[in-house]
Amino acid sequence: MQSGNKDSSLNTSQKSILIIFFALIICSVLALKNFIFQPTFLLKKFGQSSIDPEIAFTNNKPTFLEFYADWCEVCKEMAPKVDHIKTTYEKDINFVFLNVDNPKWEKYIRNFNVNGIPQVNIFDKDANLELTLIGKQEEETIKKSLDNLHVNFKSDSQILNSEFSIIKENNNYQSSPRSHG
Image (cartoon, rainbow, N blue to C red):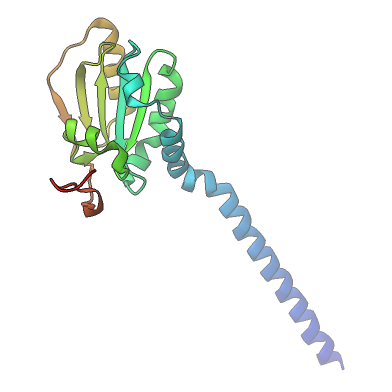
């Protein structure tokens, strides 16, 4: 009889250990969810809160235009930095975020020769393209570029960085002379 009690107590202690183990896993996932999922949520938030490009180019404010994709790891990595920049400058600068996977933005993707993302285009208040940044950028680089808009910064240069994502071909959105899109 005593061995039966011993077996039940082992089962009870094993159950307790399993419950504690799963509780720790759940707590860890909840604690890390913001760290793990924050960039994806930020990218979605950017797309939802974006100013329409037509409005941005006509309201006499400088414009920060970023081409991104939800699957782009570099875009996700830069998202917290871009969010901080947006929070700092959004009163003085338009922030436009265009997802390259959305066929609605095809005109802009072609006009600005987007072939790698993230691509940030910075425009002065008259909608003149001042600077194009392609690939992973440091927060300070973007801030300096935005600050230079106020001192009539002019540059035809393009800053390239090897850490960028090539846009995936999506034949569903390609138009042909016979298509209506």
